[in-house]
Length: 111
Picture (cartoon, helix red, strand yellow):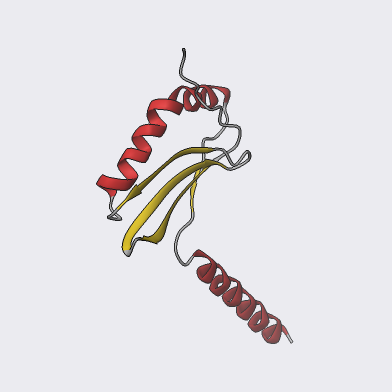
């Protein structure tokens, strides 16, 4: 029986989340197709570092989805991998506030 390989329709979303299982801290690493919400890979690790979490995730994606990346690249489509960063929302709010302060300062200068 052939191995089933998922078809990536949209962009991929990578994420690691912190959990407490039986009083132990663990990290769950996920890779999902952004459009279909299909989980491409997941694992649990005790440490949040590249060797135990991110490296196996990228290795699995390269092994199973590399041909799709190449075909999309030849077709001229961009391959995007999204990763939610801690504090992104706060940074975006600060940027918006700074822009609005600049716009208010410019409008008061022109008057």
